[in-house]
Image 1 (tube, rainbow, N blue to C red):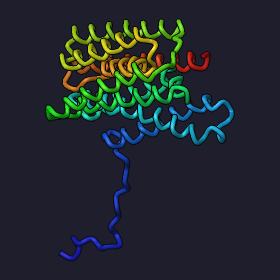
Image 2: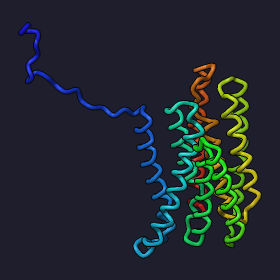
Image 3: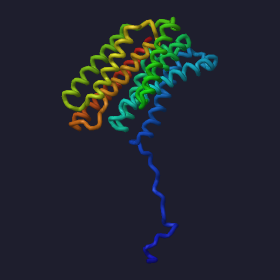
Image 4: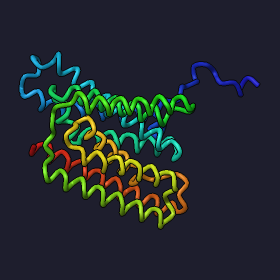
Length: 270
């Protein structure tokens, strides 16, 4: 009996290791990546006058970062049915793609502050729509979207000139999303709910792409493409074939990385 007892001096605590596959850990790391990416993209907008630009720059950067975070939360709500782990992956990638889109950085300029505020209201209303479980939540979200769109038509006077290479990249993104959605439906690795969500996001992006005189609505192009790209490209839990699911996931990651790099090159050229 005495020999079986372990003395207090011989007892050793097991080292603590972070759970990298956990949802909270992935979301924390993802938000840090989104924050630093937004900060890196925002520095050129200061044009070498960072300290004199700081008071107003904090407001513009906050609107920029919060918009990216709200897009991440929207994607998390959409991808929740795919599992928390895959939902976190889609969340991080959609926010990163949304953050580096040249449209988002351009509209972060002080002259577009009203546009960024209105676009943030639209994104918050969409988030309320997905998170709301009661009918009243849906009604308030719909009213918020109507008010935001009405404000954009009434208050906005700024215009955004879209570059031809940027519009060509957007068209290639539409084509890529359509092909990968068709392939996943044929292979049985994409359920009807994500497919309908992707279709609605793309429809929203197409409609907003025709309204180029309202910068706050142009933000919806980046949000729609970012969300639909990640949902279409990354793996989905419960697929019929794990091998096909993993293959499409790797192809999606490569494609998202290529799009991210292309966005950065276009923004530097701008």
